Image (cartoon, rainbow, N blue to C red; front, top):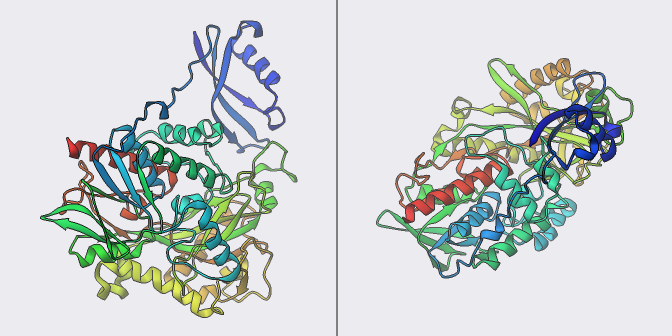
Length: 518
């Protein structure tokens, strides 16, 4: 007999197994010695009241031990001699598509323009400390994609792509902590993700897949309306039975390539704004109603949204105990993103704060056709770069000065390693973007008392929340309508947003490839 119960546990007791067992015993009205096994299957925090609590969903049994989820990798077998699929991009969409293909008995051949996670670190150091941007290896490009060095938050609100349990289990089987299977908002951390990504690579290679780094796909081979392979680094031809495009939201050259080849792409709404950074102790105090955060409570987070003139203004990719990092993918642009280590022990908390960009907003760039949104995105990134000194230092304002529309006399400390400098962000951003952010931030301050403060700093620009272009595909076959065997996938195709949603899309596309082969 298995019972499912819910308990509220004070933070000071959350690590005390004996205490929790006693609470379980009282809840189910079984003596402790009669309880054979118990397991926490969901854990979240309720901080709505004066005292924050952990909310636990627990399975309890008097009979044998609770069942253990079987290993997914145990069912893998060698695919080196099987039909092959080329995957362009080694991010979460590409790697999870590859794992799914192997499980389905198909050989994945992955090409990534960047480097493996270990070699990639040198390029991250170059952009952080010296302002040098490698257009093929940076925070967005390289093994693991943007997700590897962008925090590792594993949460998606969308259930339309399927359950996330399989993706989470695969991460655990490759070295992620088992906590991600139970936490309501699972998180791994940018210090742990590289090893997990490297382990996924080893699995793909072990079972007969191929992975090629420093392999920039410069053309797609299409013959009689069917994708037959790719050209790498302008020279090497590689053929396969299908091609999955999983290049991420910043691979602008892929959009240009598709357009040049007459393969339809289309405008997609995206978001644009800034990063706002607060002291983490301030966010803890606001969210937990405590002067000093209790030891067992994680760094507090928030999610804010409001409507300004019928347009959404919202926080995005909130990183408690995190860092702001430079996410440019080419010289001559300023782009910032956020990340957290596994312990989330930075003294700062940051979040993207953005507005949605619609087709009406890009009318000044309508001469660019389908690239109008991309042109606006590029324009903002270049404007912020040109205003600076040619490095990756980012323009910034104190939050109150940003709202008041004045340059800050000084700036607070920041986690952003390249450094920040006082600048008129209210003038550098497009006026309609600034106007909505200004009003939105005021509203956030009313919703979350203490958020609107002189201690917070606005850093620009957060412009890569998602792709401004979609590569359309059939809803059933997942293929591009015009090119048989070409499967747009993940964030770069405009069908995902974040590690897990991209991973799920990769799995779904792999299943569609299997059907295509049958």
